Length: 399
Image (cartoon, rainbow, N blue to C red; front, side, top):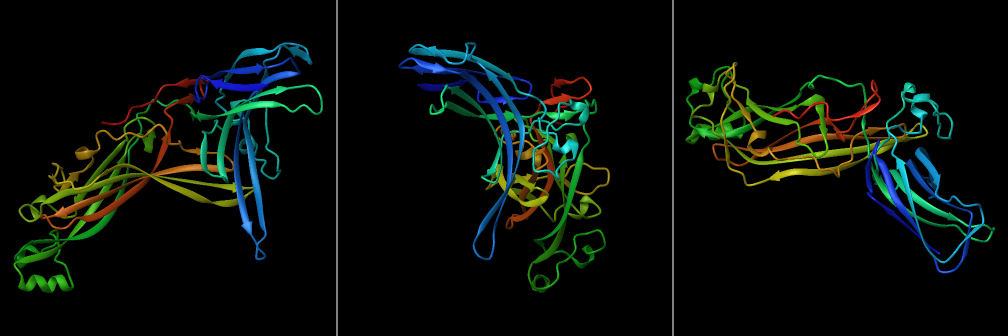
């Protein structure tokens, strides 16, 4: 007997059908009790410790998020099937919510996963996505086809397939277009300029450097100055980004002088390199004992050897402010293979987006500055608790 399992798609989103075929090939007659197919998803968080004697102990917390079993066999138990091939169709609907209600019921003190027949009124957790950090932190979904045969000594025959589940953001609908959040970071770099007169150095101008470079400035035809910078990372749409869409990101730098005239003819700025990274961190709990986070970094964009002159924007406060993202970021999208954020009782997954910017002053060496901020990555699928319906995107990425 051979059991095979074929799925119409190995990637499914919540609220959508999960369909496929179970095939059974018999070379001789066989008695069958049941043919079933099971859709099961569990999250696992483990903690491993080694004591002073080298003994290894492991505690595991497991929660079941979906467990649906359906029979495909409409004959009495023990029915004999003749040689040949049996083709059986099946279909599940991927639920929006997890069956695990431990978080809503606040019953972590027991070592058994809690379940409830209540609906979303209980504040249930949305079905989390497929996820793998390592063998001690993962969320696994799979479909299992099983043929049960009568008799103690007749083993079950089965076939299985791993499924990628795409979750939904669960909450009330919102008509607002999303707020912007700005992260600031102040850094001070240095630059070599043509010789500046002493009367230039007044409050509000670029300050002269101290130390050895100040000594060099006394005897050379150049002046070394500090360049106080303020980096800005603007995240649109409440710091949320959807898979497969453009990153809602703006990048700026400002020079902390009181007027743009303080740098005209003194300082030219060029963008030399840029790297945009997405950092993810998974952490969790094993029966209230915290498990350290596991991180991963994905490079979304990296461009080196740039030679892009930066010109200040026209601002009301006359402080020289330069936009970075419009020079290179027009086509950056979040890949659909990125796992969205989630937070279940034993495991959570968070993201941070970072930018590493290389600048040069007066065609000098490149100077590096970095800035980062937390960002929420979602699947782009929304479930409205008011209407109990899946919705399209609530808002679009800012221009």
